[in-house]
Length: 302
Ligand SMILES: [Zn+2]
Ligand SMILES: [Zn+2]
Image (spheres, rainbow, N blue to C red):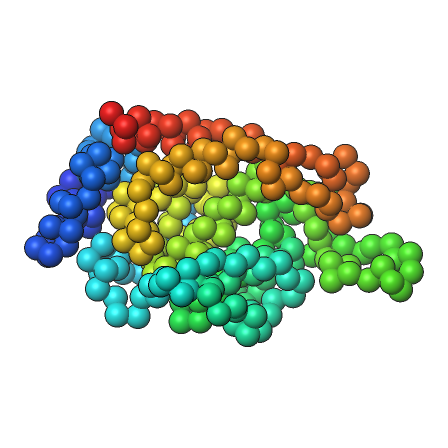
């Protein structure tokens, strides 16, 4: 196990930068927002901690990339910036990995993210991916297939699940594909991947600063260890891209967790286990994250 320690000065520069224009932009942020973001370089912060590498197969060890600080993010001329005309994020459920995501993009879309139950292999040289995003086209895709607890278990019988077809009208794009059980852990993993991929579309690169949603992940264990929240450096990038009040955003996230009645999955495919069909939104796995948000809100509302 290896802990990636950065000095206070390195983290402070990554967050605030030394460019006078960006320093003054930072100083114009709400004082309490600055206080929260400054937790990035407080060595004893209980909100943000260093990245821990657990094995040689972890992302940073196997995909050396240049880190991206706030200034590099801000000055990237190719970064996509939402506009009043292109301000929506569309989530499109699809059956196959499709290049036509780009063609499906509505005029007011900032980006379109495809969601599929099918295991994704972008190229033969890759083992698989949880998700992928194209920055230039503003499209991304992610797969639930490996998020079910069954995927790696002894019950799992390969990437294809043979289904009983009752009539030719029963055909669905999900026939012959593995559909995982909709659990709280699956929802948490899916939210992590979806928001990570959308982060890339906004121009955020993999985070090498602190534990963060934008850390790369090479395998499920690494993805599970990654938190659902952004570190202050990535949070400043996202805030700069979209423009939001951090406390309002955190309150909206807490409301989403608390509102178990909304977004209830109305029907899962008919061959899934019956006792799963009418479950309310399963948010048990989000409990720890909610506690963390409440701690941040305490800083923001002091
Ligand atoms: Zn990524
Ligand atoms: Zn980060």
